[in-house]
Length: 277
Image (cartoon, rainbow, N blue to C red):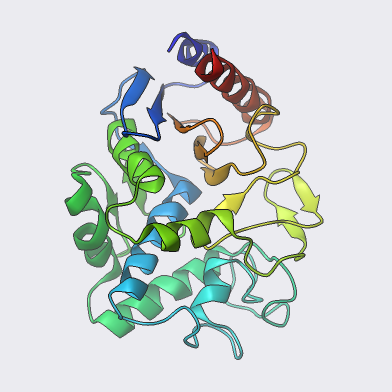
């Protein structure tokens, strides 16, 4: 896809991107080093969330089991409505009342899965997700880093396999994926979309941000409201647009900033335009 060549102009040391078609998971195009290992930052949350959903289907725990602060559940943690602060294990609100984007909440989520399963979280994610999909270079290192972001490493090639899974699930029941990515958890909840300010509402599924009518946004203006995914502070993103029938992945090694808020939507719009022909 010619649109992916836009990453050549990005002000970053390294960049790689790919587009994955939803119908059959085919990689429609790739540009840059597809096997280069990048830190994912908060794109890791997509992998963490998927591993948690596998655990739910396996009966390790349930979405409405208690986890985190009093009154909070696994569902609240996934949807950033547990009330926990951004990077502190400090309660800022009653569960379900505000969309408080929380790295701490994902730390608690991983700990809850680890306690319920008896398996270290990074190992559980590998066995439940990475190994079945053939994501041979992906890992979540929870020994010294957070499953919310800093511990995640992957490649565009590996994330293309995950993007195919999101669009045509084999590891989860399609209804589970649809609920996590297309249905707003705790509708009407407002909060801050990191890097873009307060949004009312700030729609989110179960670990997956849902674009809806947010503007400005890190995806493009051509992306449909049904687009879901995540971006990371390390200059990374993954979105799936069900209406466009494809996913786009871009990984870099420069921290998110004004440069990304400018070029990411441009790339996304160009990708959607090329997909539509």
